[in-house]
Image 1 (tube, rainbow, N blue to C red):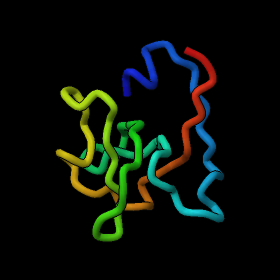
Image 2 (image 1 turned 180 degrees about the horizontal axis):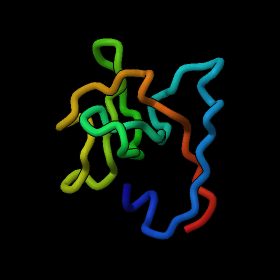
Image 3 (image 1 turned 60 degrees about the vertical axis):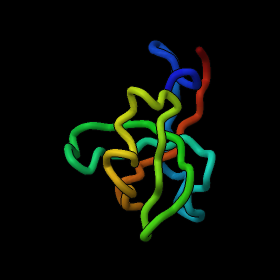
Image 4 (image 1 turned 90 degrees about the vertical axis):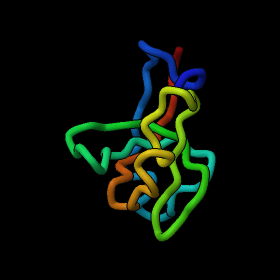
Length: 86
């Protein structure tokens, strides 16, 4: 997620952010990798497709995101990221 989140950045994840509203474009979220559920990834929501979310990393050359994983089902989105310091 560089240049938005850098190595060593402190972030908070709000796991309750989406109890009463759906994720929106522009938000950075934590989600389970659909190909390896033990791996957590953080990416920016850019839209929706086929009932899932299109998630893209800010570092396009090195991102494991919807370009390779396809739309991410909503149940794999675990929370909203808040960046607290860099």
